[in-house]
Length: 330
Ligand code: BTN
Image 1 (spheres, rainbow, N blue to C red):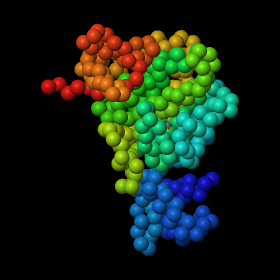
Image 2 (tube, helix red, strand yellow):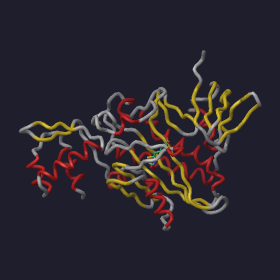
Image 3 (cartoon, protein in one colour):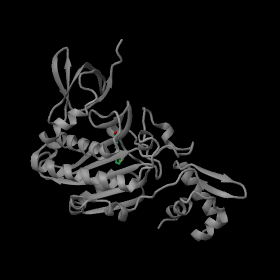
Image 4 (cartoon, helix red, strand yellow):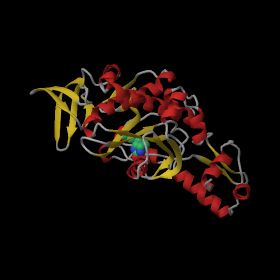
């Protein structure tokens, strides 16, 4: 186990621990402890340090644990999972899984990380990924349908993520095209689908999902302060209730793998109606920002390939990429 991981485990009791006691428990010097504490703070973990008492976490932390995730999976999902890797740190779980896919990793390979140093969102945006606060998860799916069917697969992924929140009874939850999970106008979760392979034929799809779980315990040095759009987290939308990241991961993996199985058997049509029930844009006046161009009109839902339909001055048009914003009524 990494020293940093062990350090968080010792601190997770919420009590004060002196630098000396931590050094003894971890078998390192006080200076090394101090450096790890500095790293954790810079990664977003809020910590008190009081002279004569030592260090204490602001809020308890449940570390990700592959055994606990597997224990939380229903049997149907255990049969579909190939392996689950919990990484302490990584550039991006999608990048990590992509390189596994290139060396032959099978469908159902899953990875999660406590922190991502280069987490990625759509359109080359950064996905802010502070340490031990959220869920950063990627799932590998192999298909023979080629890259052409990926829009439909995105529908399945969006529905799967929404289903994984169902038991939490979150009010005003919905999907903003292409696949942002929003609660009361703030982003809770995002999905990044990437592909390695051929346009028609075998390919490996990497479905990366980021869920904001508990950003409240983050330090002021946390990278969360740099997120450039309204965001929320599960703890806020669940009235401060503690959310187990291991349980959440198990539910999410189960829903995604079930959706992928249904997608392979029945295609994207089986997800369209459910996606539409959560469509936050349908009927609204929107601006779609494309590279160097903005298209305005009324959002008219999505089609079975996951494209956004907009009624513009030219008629009904379909779009497969872009950033959409709702027009404020004047
Ligand atoms: C978006 O809304 O723009 C998509 C965000 C996707 C973030 C997840 S976190 C796990 C996986 N690894 C990444 O680097 N990105 C995705």
